[in-house]
Length: 450
Image (cartoon, rainbow, N blue to C red; front, side, top):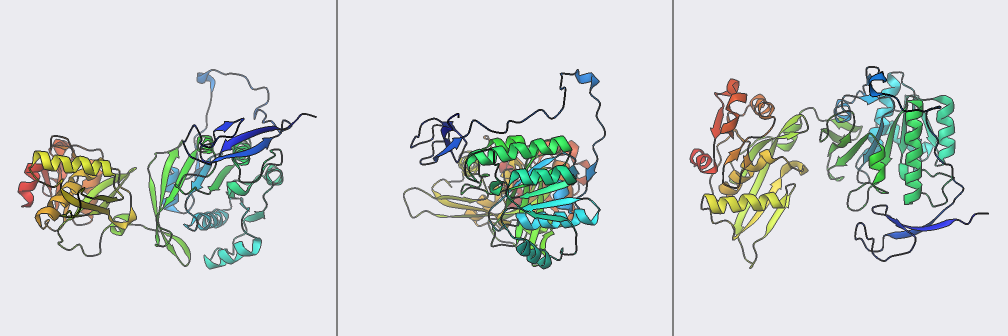
């Protein structure tokens, strides 16, 4: 009988080696290499198509892609318009943030549209799921619930009954009997995910895989899982607050960096129909250091409030504290303010906050960050109902950004009266000429504010 092969696999990045090491050479983490035995007698994956042969691209015929609506518009948005047959989606997020709740609501909605659905739970009992369904008022639906961890039994039921949608909650609890390692280990997760993806493509069934995350926020298990699936979604937000953001990281059938907004209530996750109001105060008062920017999240424009506080430093090295904004971009903007407009701000403590718990990576927010810093430092009140949108260059110029028409339209729709945008965007915003002010550099912007 062949002897089982012993490997040491990194629990963070999936790197494997035949000998134990204290530090992983791939991700440089200490103490992450764990031992597991890989049996040589395993179930090897087989081809999905019999007599599979290469074909010419021009000879391939495809049907029009029909999507199934989730009846949750925010989830449809991040999926690219709905669920495609054979699509495999991976959903990750912190414990308690609402992954299982959203999946249970999805199963109930699909059942209401006569779409056969299987909800596989490896973490909860039937009674626990029943109690949760009663809390979110979805207990009258007749989708199938299967409390099982064995991948062979799950696959056998799916092949016999062929549901249209399968939800696996979670992929870390499912184990493959053909892989000799403990459930939740790197080898088990990789093997289970590969077989489920193969099953989805072979039977043309849509799969949703719920994934646990590590302390750093990444999906637990090897990174290869994210390469296997078609869509990767992440829940963002603080589990102790009511708002959640579902963000698309990868999508083979739609745009990436889309977001869906949800509010956690007693009855479950409820869609936020106007996300811009979530990021803004109900009454925007005239405070120093506060400004509004129009940012793009995928194809969606959002108005977001940015707060800055500049104060005298009591230490040798000034503090730079960012919440929801890249500290390197902040350092660049501070250097430009100091060099190009003579604002001696580098010796000050700087605190920057993106309200609502959001994360802002859009370069179009640079102008709003700059004017918030100037406002706080010089104690200048920014005019009410003003929006700032543009990228700040190293010479202090205001550069054009993408999607400017959608940004301006969103600001006008919410009643903002003064919209400051780059001078290079004149041709795209002619119809908003009465409410738009064109800015070429930071000095010109300052002349309009002071």
